[in-house]
Length: 159
Image (cartoon, rainbow, N blue to C red; front, side):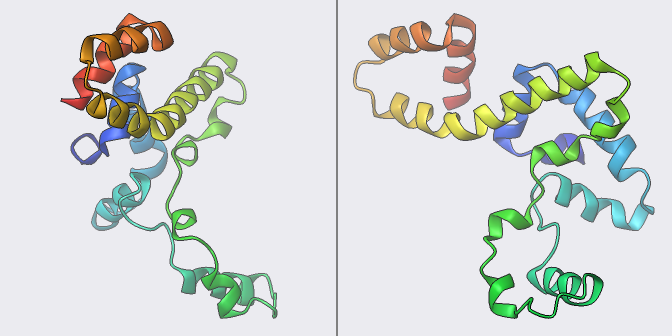
């Protein structure tokens, strides 16, 4: 399910880094496998950002009853943007498992940076490409800015 349901931009970024298979194995071993079979589908959706990791009611209850924070009003909790309720990519990596392995820590750090770059830049680059009247000139500009290999990869993702 992780392989099939990976959102497009995340899939694109992980494939660019040749990290999709390794990421799927990592997430499955550290986040999904420890849950009972009937909960795994829900956990996968949360990990992929297809389902909220928690609701605002759960946050309110957490602040109020677990942290004993009586001034955690419903209005304050409702002001939390919905985007913060979804799991970011960097939280799908078990960073503690790499504290003794500098190579793997750096590897996942670079993958995380690529995922964040693709998430922030892909839509702008795609829009610029699609609005361009002169595709060869635009492709030349992109090659100068991103390099030939990444440009071809990006253009293929637009089509």
